[in-house]
Amino acid sequence: MWSVLYYILYSVCFLISLLPFKILYFLSDLLYFPLYYCIRYRKRIVRKNLITSFPDKTKKEIIVVEKKFYAFFCDYIVETIKLLSIRKANMYKRMTFKNIEDCDTYIRQGRSCG
Image (cartoon, rainbow, N blue to C red):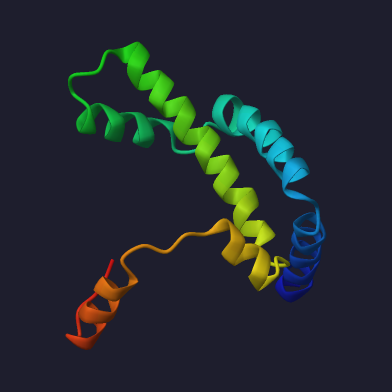
């Protein structure tokens, strides 16, 4: 049962991943409304963390940051789905790597570079 559901969900996500970025970001904007206003996914936790992290901000400023976080989170969801079908060349075109030599140094020392 679960494996059938997995393959159905994977197939749907793969088909969505074939869409161009413009359409994916439009879907992200559509996803924002139900996630923030209806489902309210982890809203109390996000707000509590923002208040703790930014004690000097007013409630209105916290809400603005909160909404921006949810918009970013929706973009992150669709970008993650896009990873199912994106070509390496296209992915590298969209990414920049800085200070890679620092990571190499940490790895040689047996440390994490994160």
